[in-house]
Length: 403
Image (cartoon, rainbow, N blue to C red; front, side, top):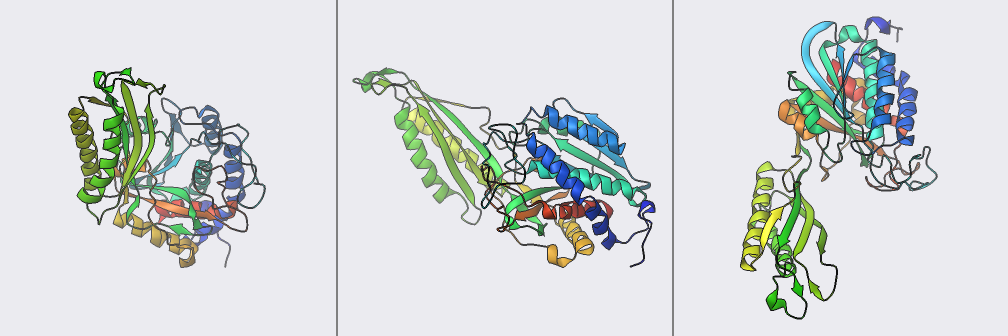
């Protein structure tokens, strides 16, 4: 192939891969820096300093949001659409193990009890690599690219601030990547339709009246109706929701009382339900509330709900046109062999908020490599990433913008 002057953007789509490979080492270096200094949701102060350092080095203008989020802007040299790329920046309160599934990991969290056990370190690094590729071929960019680094995705604490910051901007299309432990390294999956589940938070307080355990008739126990509520949820989900639309129910917390001979005045139930069809999600919430309130009333208790007792975020449903276009772009850049198949993921993602603002797609970047030892589930102490193919994420994001 004849050598082309990349600085002037005189390139073909297949050459985007060559440029992305030039930044592979940079992406790995940045991923490791983020990984070594993880910060939990809403506390990503050092992380933002590192991001600002890199953006300043690129000469890219950016806006600091309230909290720790950032919106950077790359203006193309040609008129065209306004597109958005997003990376989340927070880590998890998860103790990282020294070894992955097979051996000692290449980089270890330097903060005890905190780690990037979901892959957001890779998301940031890939987006920074994409920005450097785009700047190198800026004369090929049609329109404007907003690069969003979102605070607190794991707890949803930064999404409202990000959405408010974007209110003044009309975004035509959006795209994001999420590394996926269930997909082989070297593969990318971008397809239309539901990709990540919506989350229905469950947080219910039953209020009764405390009393001595020897005279339950003189108290109003919230424990008995709570037990009925739990069993009724499983029955109702089985019999009242559409069997063709999966809705899972995961009850993870039941708290009530401190002494064996004292009937408490309050009981708490916490958990989540996950869904892909918005209508079934709303139906599930109605069922949960109706059973809680009716059962509580029949036992002379009252109900209040925690603030998290709602649907947030909604399901991530990829727009068919955007997903198909990005898939074709990836094929043009990297070849059809990098396209991989994987099932929809039952975890939830705030990227659904962006999809309410404009058409878009979320892609999965494979990180599973048995020989290296990556492939442990997300939010797990053994979770690790095969870094060797992170450049494919850069290719996918660049293809979204350029092709």
